[in-house]
Amino acid sequence: MSRQIEVFLDRSWTEPLPIYAWAIEHPEGVIVVDTGDTARTSEPGYLPRWHPYYRLAPRLDVAPEQEIGPRLRRRGISPDDVRGVVLTHLHTDHAGLHHVPNSDVFCTQAEYRLARGFGGRLRGYLPNRWPAWFRPKPLVFDPAPFGPFERSRALTADGSVVAVPTPGHTPGHVSVVAADDDVSYFLAGDVSYTERLLLEEAADGVSADERSALATMRNVLRYARDNRTVYLPSHDPDSEKRLADGIVVRVS
Image 1 (tube, one colour):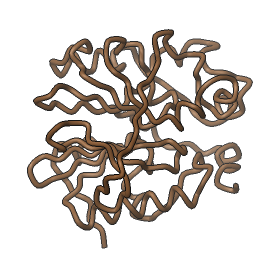
Image 2 (image 1 turned 90 degrees about the vertical axis):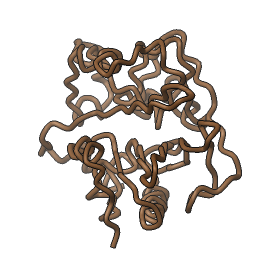
Image 3 (image 1 turned 180 degrees about the vertical axis):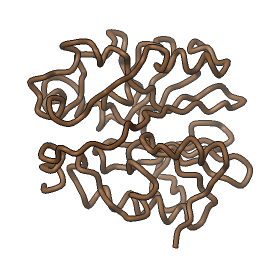
Image 4 (image 1 turned 60 degrees about the vertical axis):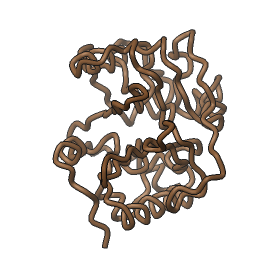
């Protein structure tokens, strides 16, 4: 509980942090993991000022050209060609959805239930800002272990792209692991905000269930011990460099 209280009481601010989304180019089609946020967060009234979190905690600054649609086009990918979108969770900075109306969008049923309606708004989600067409397909895990994860869901026929449950930041949080040759790219959403915090096993202040968050981090670390893993959380300024240079996690 003290971690969550500090979110509201601590008035020091980090340097600006990125909001990363990821595109996996696979022979079966492009898979996008998370969709960032919308530039509309800068519009007066878009974020609920009645909610203490949005009044006190985040400051969002997303330019129109930084939204997922323009960013995909810069990579030569049309949003209409995206085969599927996996949302690690439904917080607004991961669920800017209006650029992908023609894609299958997946999240866990647990996450969708938590985020819907006024109850979701009280928890800090923004279901009132979802597009009218948004009806996510349920991401259901198979009883198939994937490293230390007891369940998993293959997203491609060859098994090179796999979703795993990573609860903690939210109860329905998931991550996606993409294998390329002998390296695994662990698209971690908000398992931790940075790689350093993963290595320190430090749960963030948003995680309501610290025990679950720590158990997930330990599973990620176990996976990284056994597999050459590039760890890519969504808000780590060093994620882009680690991806470009193939820098793997060094787990002691």
